[in-house]
Image 1 (tube, rainbow, N blue to C red):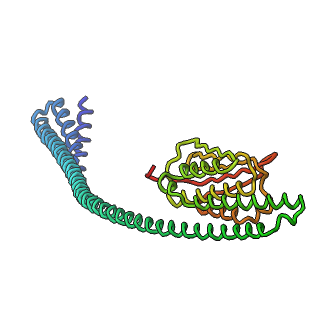
Image 2: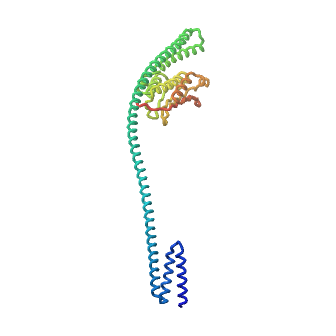
Image 3: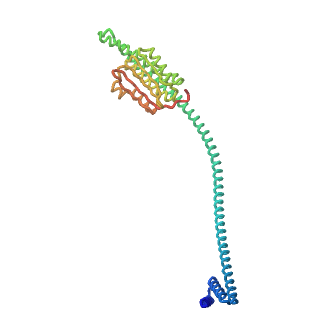
Length: 353
């Protein structure tokens, strides 16, 4: 047993000698060696040496403990520093966010102020524009009224000229026919002579009535339907043709120039029927379909000649008037006899109904 204790003492002393020569302290190893020596000397009965080695053991134990404490303190200090830096980083980040929020808020305030004053400017500008537009509309209305009055006067003048010219031609023709001595004619030619006298007399009366109604006052006062009704009422009384006027929907007032052009188309159509169709009835129909105004004029007469349909000045005039209003004009022969006219135009009702 003592041999093993001596061997342990020798090994421990040798280890301590080696550690003393080293530049590194190795406190844990020294503590273990002093613990071995303290226990070995105590078992070997050498109390004094055992106590001396125990004190060294205790000293290095304390050193190690202090080192652990210092390490823990240092670790805590590092952790505190890291935590402090993290908190500072978070604080700086919050400051940056707060600064951005403040900048955004200030920007929104500036934009709101600009928007407010911009809105005021736009409202003020719109008010001025409305006043200018109203003044322009008023001025345009005055100009349109003046133009309308001028056109109205011109239409009446042309109507009077046309009437005088047409009446003069018919009167001349009638005079030439009357210049023929009926006593010099045989029975057949006498019949023809009488028919020519009747036709020229009737044509004179028809043209007088038609041209007299070229621009009736009722058209300007009450509109297209009332003017057409007044016209066909006179024609029905004057001639043996039955005129039937039907208004499928309530037809309001349109722009006055459009009403004039529509009336001219209807007037020209009726004029052609009275002169050429030898019809017993004429149906005139007014209706609205969505934004379209549709007029149809239908008779049971002899129909329209193909060449007249292609080259007739009256038909060309009606097509031109319909196209001018952005609409269309169509005419065709019906079977077994008769003629039908369609006029379709886009409309905007006038405020005057």
